[in-house]
Length: 123
Image 1 (cartoon, rainbow, N blue to C red):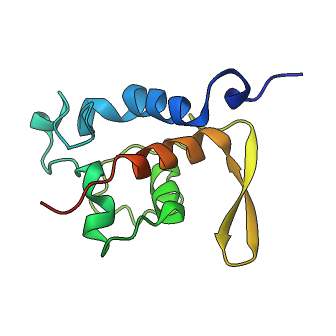
Image 2: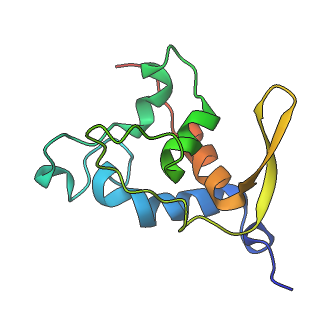
């Protein structure tokens, strides 16, 4: 049997590694939207450290996971790739609404938790 990702690496480290691998080219290593590919984009990438600040101080983990995996996209000018297939694998149960537990890829949860950990107050 295959080991879970987190059996080999703490969840926070998995999230940071996936952020470095998948997000940093656009959003930068710090998550502030200053990655090497940002200059070539028509619309600058979002500052991932201000997600909560842009949402009234609330980090909506379920919404963020939905945007990352491509589930909650309106595709109106969306340039961010859909990472759902890349982050697929072992799942964990996540409460996606009160009383509703949804099987969620462990790595997707790890990435969302990492993003939550780098939030900062509005400038």
